[in-house]
Length: 306
Image (cartoon, rainbow, N blue to C red; front, side):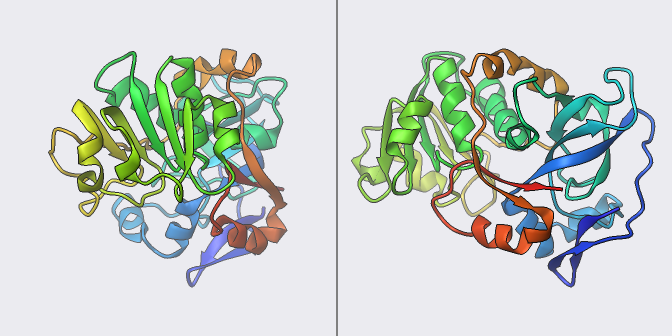
């Protein structure tokens, strides 16, 4: 079995890994496509080593969270041979940059018939994060005024589309060349960072989502409504994301969720929700993919294929 392993903090493609065996409530999956995202660089840099140690993580592959593939074993919800996709646990269990993985059934869902493996692998984290924001963290359920910073990235493209589906008014900020694309996804207003500073915006937002990881609560506080929430993609002490401030909502989606992935199937089938894939690479071209990942101005996810 092949997989990407971290060797002295460098990601290396290796053969000869042992195929994992599913535990109780788990299924064995042959991976066809997996996403590449900043988590993988962070994992290779050792940022999660202390968490891995604390939770007893002992798998050789430490990178990869999203995937699409086929079931090698059945379970209580899924059958052998079904096409499935999902999101592995952020810390524990198998990571998805391997030919075979085992995951709990509740982390995965079936792939709609008209989606490719590459498209499906680009969806889970962005969809689940956006649903968590709008359904769990929002100060109200409807008529939101939303500012999405970093709207063209791997999460922002889904936050933009799902905001439209809920009837929210959305302002999208992104890098150069994305404004028409973001309006096509459903943004009511879209601006480039260079043409619209935070100080140029009208404010009174119910939600400010910072997927760019560039801003802090203090940077954005003046733009929030009385009950508004600032939600940084990577909450920490520096951006205010771990504080008890009333204008902070703590965002952390740890793993996949069958019911939530199932909930967007109608939107995927009628094209009201579209996967966004920046580029597809073979796993043996992962160095090129990693270089691409670190460039600015991407749209959606970079995908690796076996």
